[in-house]
Every structure is written in structure tokens, then in C-alpha cells.
Length: 152
Image (cartoon, rainbow, N blue to C red; front, side):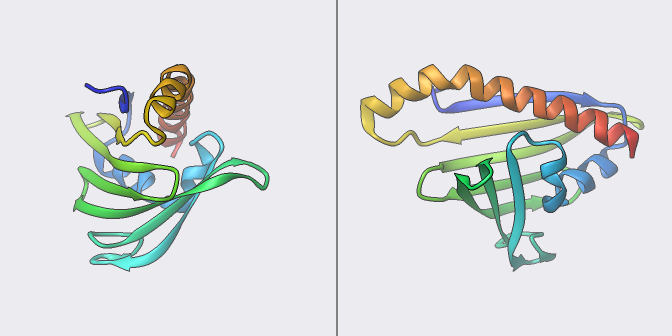
């Protein structure tokens, strides 16, 4: 695992199909992902923001201060996995969101990122300092995701 690699997971006490449907409802991601709002930008093979080739964008920040993280969906396995390519000016690399069924009413939701760090040694140093905070924010967000999904 390199410095830019991140993997965080959470158990969700709901069926895998519902969990997949909830996390791929991109505009609702703001309900659980800290400091983020997401919108669909282009239709993919399965409709707006769905399927290979679709484009989504997440704004990360507070109020007007932040940045857009644009993504193209590179793989869509219905009910199981979505892979993205980050295409923005700040965030580059790949990511995956995976649902693994444990039993008929419980699954594991896995969030991974393989980020390309900009700015050479300065970017690597900065990310090394910020990575624990970023991972903690994703972990807290996924715990909120699980609570919200379980209440659906």
C-alpha cells in the first residue's frame, strides 16, 4: 500500500441491494459524507450518473470554499461495485465502492482510494500529515452511512 492508498470499511445491518442502491444515489451522499455534496453530470450505460461512462462530481468543502472532485465511472457491477477515475484538477487517481454480502441482512461497505499525490515531495509530505484526518473523516462518514442505511 502506498501513501496515497486508503481503505475504510463498515458493516451495515441491511441487505446488500439496499446498501448499493443507497450509496449510488449520488445526490444523497451529502446526507452521510462529511463536507461533500455530489451530483450526476453525464448519463452512463444505465442512466444519469449510473453505469460505465457516467460522470459524477463531488464538491468538498464548507460553503463556497472547497473544490470539485470530478469522476468518471469506469466499472459498474450492479449490486456490488462501482469503480471511478478521479479526473479533477486536485484529486487524481482511482477509487472503488464495494458492497460485500455477509448474510441476507448484513453486508460490508468498503471505500477505497488510490490517490496520485501532486506537488512531488511537498504533496507527499502534506498528505502524510493530513492522511490520518482524511481517514478519520471517511471512517466517521461511513459510520453515519451505516446508521442512515439501517434506518431506511
